[in-house]
Image 1 (cartoon, rainbow, N blue to C red):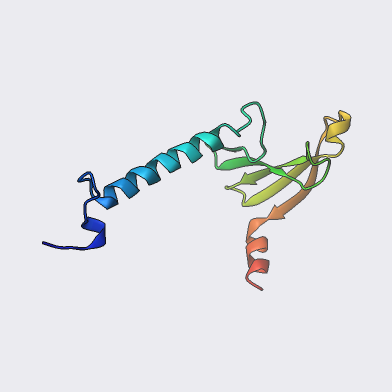
Image 2 (image 1 turned 60 degrees about the horizontal axis):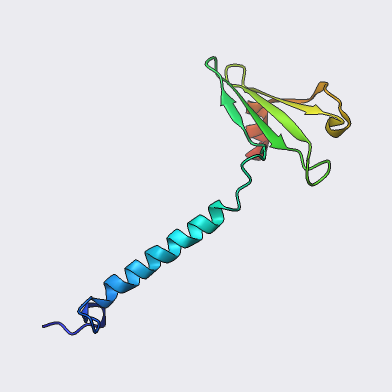
Length: 118
């Protein structure tokens, strides 16, 4: 009979490994429930993406500007057919400004060429 520690039964006849696995599963379940309780279900988060049928995609990205509790966002539109990236931004979003301004247009082949050092 093998006398390895992980196979040796506990006092009640239950293998030690099974007890450790059950205890670990209970701890993981408890931690999952605790973390789920911390999620704010009413919060809106940036980073929503949408892909269109004609080769275009859009994503909102936190710009890093503005107040910490409501940072400004930018809208990035990728035109897959034309290989262009358009970056839009609302200048004074928290002041009620609603105008979406085009900030930059990037030709993607040039961007990748520069990234490769060319």
